[in-house]
Image 1 (cartoon, one colour):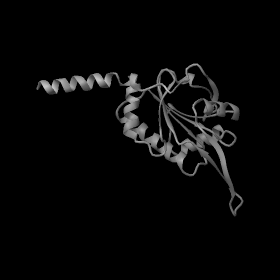
Image 2 (cartoon, one colour):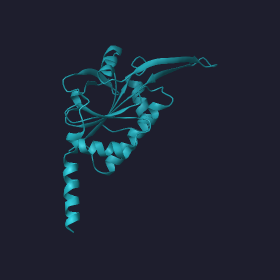
Image 3 (cartoon, one colour):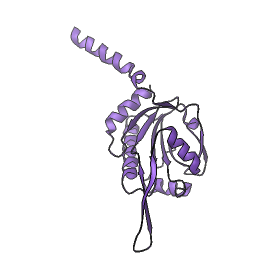
Image 4 (cartoon, one colour):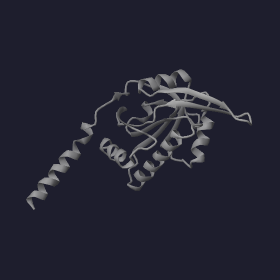
Amino acid sequence: MIKKFFIIIFITLVLSGCSKDIPVIKDLSKINYKLIDQDSTEFNFPQDLKGKTVVLSYIYTHCPDICPLTTHNIMLINKQLEKENINNVAYVEISFDPERDSPSVLKKYAEVRAIKSKDWHFLTGDKKTIYDLLKAVNFKAMPGDTTITPSGDTLYYFIHTDRISLLDKQNRLRKNFKGSNVDKKVLINFLKQLDK
């Protein structure tokens, strides 16, 4: 009985201090990027997110593989957090293809996936601002091959980092995961630690 008591105390102490053990990768609290969301509303990233834990990813809407998988994983994470009644979380997907991903294109991307949450923001902006932001978070994206189909459609690709990031309530980047095949349980556990 005494052994179980000490095990419970040990686990409680370890879990209560865990968010302090997640290192700060980059403090984004002093920077601000003027972006636009899927509703064409101005959005200050990350300032408008202060006070929320953030699940952040980077996409382009014509991506044939990694980006849709990443968005789908975030949808599953969102569903699980809603089940657990954890709702102080914002979901942000920033397009690194701002020339094509206008607010209306981002809105359609969300609608096709039935994403209606007011806490889910698809962001775009001018190319320089987007690429300054990507540089600040050490995210790489560069145009790859472009192909013309027999029907004349242009297919284009980006070579890019595969990532979902977690920001804490003070706008500090705390953890990165591989977005297309993230272990959702592990991400949720880290998120819960940051949400305390």
